[in-house]
Length: 462
Image 1 (cartoon, rainbow, N blue to C red):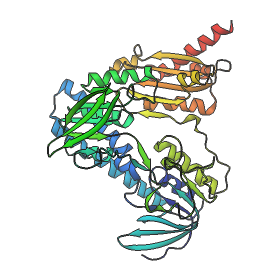
Image 2 (image 1 turned 30 degrees about the vertical axis):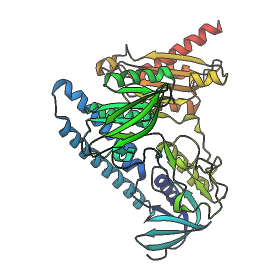
Image 3 (image 1 turned 45 degrees about the vertical axis):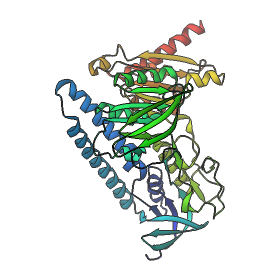
Image 4 (image 1 turned 120 degrees about the vertical axis):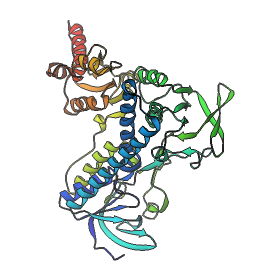
């Protein structure tokens, strides 16, 4: 490889944080290069958000088709995998096109920081040196591997679970968080017998119990066995199956399945050859890099975004931080504000939350007014045969300003954006209640939840 001239901004990692950072940097007039060691688009595009949602969507279509025209699960799953790969290829191609047309230099290989202004890119035994004025670290994360259940053979991470050539007859999922829920339910809809082992009291512990309840109900309707309070102990695998031994209430149990999927979280990619220690950039015990409101690290000209920084490991959080970091480098006064970052689970029914929840408000002794409305009598939900769930709006009881919202139900992932905007712009529940929604649409449930909050405020003010 030849030596590349110095760039103003070097971005390491091309996921939803990295490629957006490179785009914004170049758009703001800075000479920019991006380094990717694997596949352009990162985990999200190739083995995360995009392929998982494609397979989930296909599982819903297959499940719906079964009610009217029974189809062969094996054939349908193979078709789903082909569809998924087509989406992934299109998305990856889109990332490449955006970067090239923006004038970003795309460099392939493993990046290694040698000092505060120099990186070496290694690929296939060759090395290339690049110097930079600023750097944005966007190296992402990887699935956490349990010592007792190392990945390989019949123990899968989310990466392998998205690429199985056929839907297994049975699957045991270790971890009842959102990844385990999404993939477990997806496979169940394709006919896989799924067992979920969760160490806590319930699945989806990051959401309010009443919000997660409709999902747990549907999981059982899908034939999924949920074992809570379970501690996985050891495994025995052979060429055809894997047996997991676990304890619950002091008693020993075991479950045998074709595969075991471990979904207990993700680990930031701040170790290895990156060389943070060489440049004196410290990480926390969890491997996270500390940053300020502009995503700047302890080394002022080096920024960090996405999964390697504090906060939820979300693609849209990384993209948001990417814009802030690039704009800060360009001299703008941009700062992060996390109050309106939505959390979404593509389960059935879908879950979404933004801002403060009622439970969090109670724990922090923050007074709130809560408006709630169900999907059960909504005309559009009835037409879609998707009447499970509700919308909840959380607001300041005096001003009525929306400070949080939660949804469980059909299209929650889409509907939450309206509520995120409400929080971002400082809208009130009256603003939401007075917004005319077309009829019949799912958005009317948000309007009705807001109306309920307004009604409570009116009664209290008498």
